[in-house]
Every structure is written in structure tokens, then in C-alpha cells.
Length: 192
Image (cartoon, rainbow, N blue to C red; front, side, top):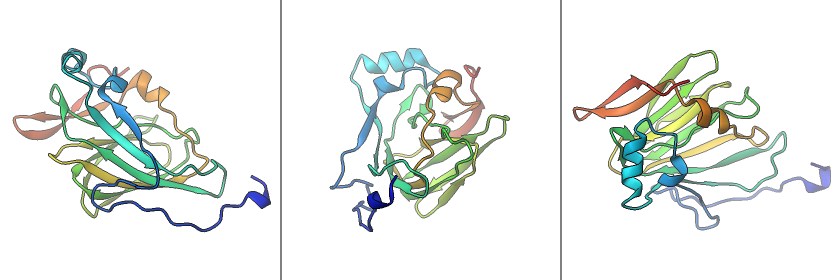
């Protein structure tokens, strides 16, 4: 970006409870956009016969994706399950793999599932007031394990990009599911 196109200071409104912004439109992901993401594809197809629920949405800045800038916004993952697997975001690596990201939980209850190409994985709980640091090289996905929307605020370098394709192709090694009324981390039977 040239010097004359430098971003000037600004503010942007986000509601600290529900994550909504009255200044931007959100990007929405419905259940039909999540085909191949959940382990129980038959349960997903059965759900789609009765409608196409909103699984998550996010608000982010429309800043130029240039070095030195930061992108930030909110992500809202709604409560629900496909089979026994909680509603979640698709998840992504960053195109610039050595990019870290920070998520701060504004409301709700859930988890951040992370893994790197070398096979290391981690799960961190998200509850009001907790910040999760996603290290460089880690794919990450928000999972709502509660009964209300999971709302997070995120920030990362603007030129990092998003690689959804790797996750769409391979999935994550682990799943977060409900078993006997409790949250469990299990191996993903579809992981490639």
C-alpha cells in the first residue's frame, strides 16, 4: 500500500454481549455451507430436510490486507449439534502459516480446537473474559458447547489470509462431542 493510502485512526462499534456490529454486515455460514465438516453426514442431511440453521457468523474489517495492519472483528457461533458434535466454525490455517491470532471470549461457553501440520493439537476452554492465544502454524476452530451464542473478539495481522481448503480436505484430528451429557474430545474417524 502506498504512503498516501495510509489508514487513519478510527473506531468501530461491537456489542460486548452479542458481538453484533451496527456498522458492518456479517458473513454468515449456514448448515448447508458446512457439508463435509461434521463427522455424521447423515445427521447433517436429516437436519437440512427441516431447514438450514445459521451455524455461525462473523464481522470483520474491510481493511486492505497489507503488512503492518491488523484485522479484527467478532465471531458468533450459535448453539446446536449435528449428531453429537457441537456447532462450530469451519476453522482455518492462515495462508501466512507463521501467523498467530488472539481470541477473547465476550460471552457463551465453548472451546478453541487447534492443531499444527506436525500433528500437535490443543483445546482451550472459552468462557467470558478468557483470551486464547493461537500460536503460529496452528489451524483453529471455535466450538460452541453451551446453550447460548459463543461470542469472541479476534485480532490478527491483516496480510495473513485464510486457508480453509486444507481443513475442508483433511478435517481436524480431534472432534469435540457430547457424550452422556458431558463434553468429550474424541478422534475424528474421517481424519485423512
